[in-house]
Length: 103
Image (cartoon, rainbow, N blue to C red; front, top):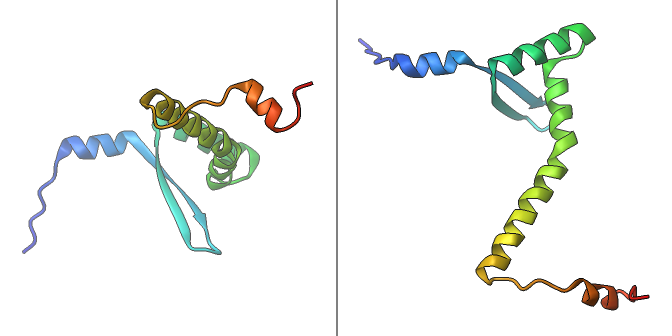
């Protein structure tokens, strides 16, 4: 006999979030993401109204914004490194001189 203990708070929180999967069949890579219900609804409506899949739009959104997210993360890390003394900033005038752009 198998006894399952259910935490109803967890079930309710899962039901409040919807899951969308993004799959790359060629490389067998899949990503499951939790979306707020309102975003899941919007994504579903967009997909239905355009004849494309939710996966298509989720993939497009990630591809569109990942460069920006990486840039922001890198800038935050560099700022922390400067504040902690791990890295020294390079004055802009030195960069211009190094690349022969001073004039």
